[in-house]
Image 1 (cartoon, one colour):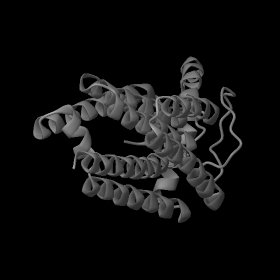
Image 2: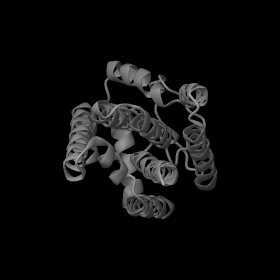
Image 3: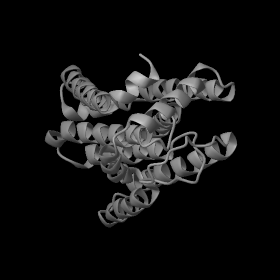
Length: 259
């Protein structure tokens, strides 16, 4: 499967990836519910300490491997350049215009305003620890991404469609990591606060938004494939650590209150 073939079928591949991600998320959730005998138990199982540590270590290892590939300009970097070039040639203008609107769901301004609104609502409803975990997750991912961009200083791919213009460095994708943390942490907050009948929908919706935003950056040629993959990896590591830590504290305090 070469870069030209991918670029010519990019929209179909995007749809297949979205459907696959949604199907996998739904299947994983339903299996967790069956094994743990309930929606609440499934949510707790997905964030237990052993799972949290395993996900964080795996995602950091993946991000490190990608970074080495980019630093050494090996096969992944060559694939990045080839795919970006082919997308620049083959992506339809109408599709780019529509995708450029969709990608704003991961903009720093949009997520920042939404994050502030969620924070205020959590404080107003007296969920102070959830509010603290929420704002720590969002501020943390912004700092991590800025530090990594400054460290690697990778230039963005060239494009001439003009629908999206970015001026910061490319690696890793801030939209990919930001959407992973924002929508992932929002899902955790809603899983804690909403009735179990909503849990499956919450998980699937979060996966949909994360998938749509990240891949839109590749199709728009404002990020290389590896930028988005690394953004997903660092974002998943961070949101898992934040949500897992928040859940550990919440359950520990619940046990203390019950004793």
